[in-house]
Image (cartoon, rainbow, N blue to C red; front, side, top):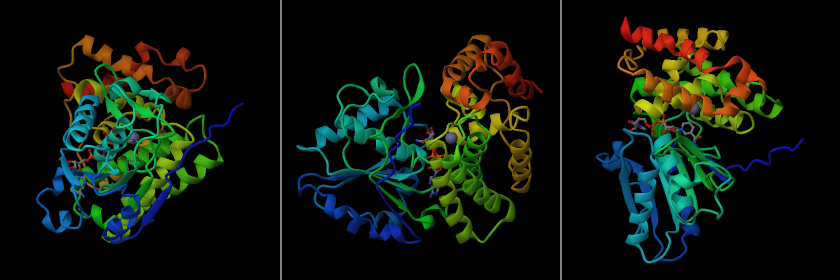
Length: 365
Ligand code: NAD
Ligand code: ZN
């Protein structure tokens, strides 16, 4: 048996207000005055001058505002890389992603593609990246995905939604400042927070579970329960959810996600449904796989008056439904984790149609 030798984030700073230290943190990494830092920033902050004025710009550093309305695409990564290369005579000193999973994943991918030739779609998969990326920093402004700690950057390409999984993907530096999450809209707070909760349930109930993952998964699960069921004060809640996200991400680093993620990847590839909400829509129907987890999920949903959108799959043709199922079935490690080595004898195209049926039924009803 060969054990996975997993990379981790090299440096992390945690604390309310720690974002103010960003200049001091990145200054030693500046190669020279001509090599800029490129800040990829969620465009939700574009009009927030008090926030953007804290971004420590010097020399020819640039801010590129990014819309998080859609999940990152390989074509978007490629055009950002081209733009950065054309705007500077030498490689940047670093890429700094400030936002949720969408912007952090883009920052990771851009850093890698500045030093690896071709299109980012060529690297969707496992360990295809040849060269170390440039210095990259992740600064989450919403908590849950665990992207700040993971060794993947999830991209939608022309034929698949799949991450660039590599030892070079994790951030060199992460800044965890829970204050940055204080204006997240409530529904989005719930959806992205539930991504973390579902990471824990899928990791803890999977076949790949081990003491390393369990330690992180149990900690994250406890934090999620405190945040979503005990309603602590806003500051404590923001602090706890940020740490839940980190631990949830660490838990899956050494295990795997499961059924909800496989199905929601399919949903997202086909309909562009975003990850957090897609997971919630699917997970709501997975009592057969995660009975306790789904029960608690429904309780949290009720407590926060969350109504999941219905009717998403209403107009899907059978052919589109097939594509969705193909994407889900292609994620073999996820099924192996959830069901076991012989998952193919239990999970067939037909059984997936059966599992997915409620999302169609409720669309019709
Ligand atoms: P997101 O980054 O897509 O952001 C969701 C919404 O919240 C956006 O409208 C954004 O503008 C808004 N937002 C973010 N911070 C805000 C703030 N402080 N105040 C107000 N609004 C704010 O959401 P997400 O759920 O964090 O990320 C989803 C993405 O993460 C997907 O693309 C998914 O594939 C990816 N993901 C990656 C990993 C990984 O390990 N790399 C893991 C899970 C998910
Ligand atoms: Zn997830």
